[in-house]
Image 1 (cartoon, rainbow, N blue to C red):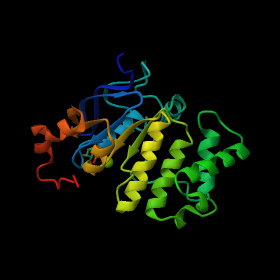
Image 2: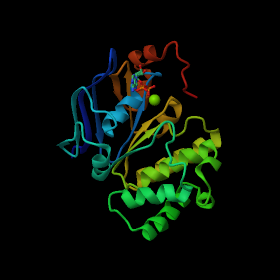
Image 3: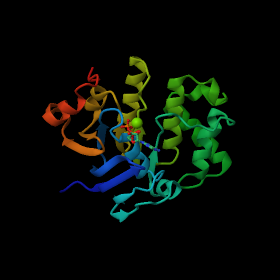
Image 4: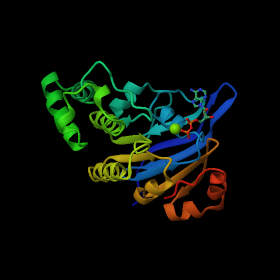
Length: 246
Ligand code: ADP
Ligand code: MG
């Protein structure tokens, strides 16, 4: 049986004035997989997440989710269809507690829970990401790594089918990275399809079923991690960059 394509980017273009951040980018994501999306700084990874999740309308090409054309759909609509993302720079609501940040997502997510039910579920989600004791705190009282996991909790409260992770592990120490990787493994076991953007190629390669490499907004390689990392085009793309493979 062929794997089901959950998300498909066809020849997607994103121009910002004269800057072509995505240039005829093709990418298919299979249901149930962990797809690692890597590439040098500025290669278009965040932009691709932004167009898939509806922050930007692409200036060309098509995005399909579960077989339907969703190009240019608004973020709320896509969230209801089952696409959630985290931000490279966390974007919590600073005036709310940690718990209420997650409860908000449960209230306005796919099934729209009542305030009490949303708070109950928010407790569970915080426990899952290791923030059980932090719910009553103001967001500003969290450390960087705790904010990253809060970001993940907010995305999970949307009950996604497809979760787009933009550098959730960046800036974390090795023990925190291991915690993050274990969470991602658990999400995969729960049936969530993951697109995992990370600058640290080594961490992504260990976890991903397939790797896709962007360079100047183009997909230059897709496939099993070992094969992709030995691809001469990929090695060349990383020349001059510190190869974050450890
Ligand atoms: P990555 O996440 O791979 O580091 P980005 O997607 O953030 O790369 O950026 C790709 C390119 O697009 C860069 O040249 C960046 O400067 C440009 N870019 C991204 N977002 C914008 C924007 N909102 N306005 C102008 N240029 C942008
Ligand atoms: Mg980025």
